Image 1 (tube, rainbow, N blue to C red):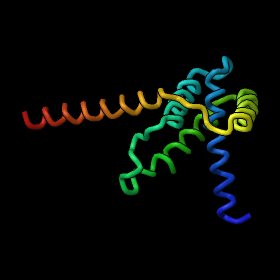
Image 2: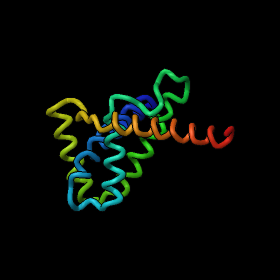
Image 3: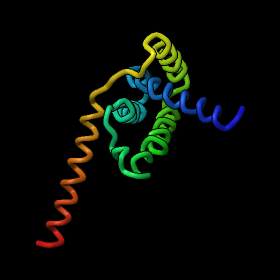
Image 4: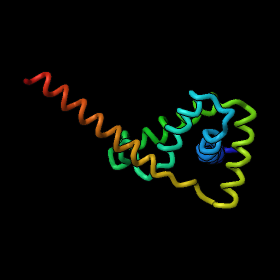
Length: 131
């Protein structure tokens, strides 16, 4: 198996695990910390907008290539193995029947809140430095 095929398999696994976390956070057996991270990751992964827009050179793809896979990996590690197996089966079934990721507009809210808080913090810092 060549490197391109390995990357395709890895990318499919990341995509599936994003959907897996969508099912895992709904499971009552998932611990609270894992649920919180799952909600965050799912909201961001399924959001139609990015935290760092893709048109920004290099930085625009960092969240897609590094941040999101690391967050998905961490969330998957926090979910109990039994819940993870059930959620992966549900994710595989969803992807086979629907052929797409679920849609989630909470990601838009998450990204907008992060940007508003960032701008607010920068404004406060600027005011404290110059006034």
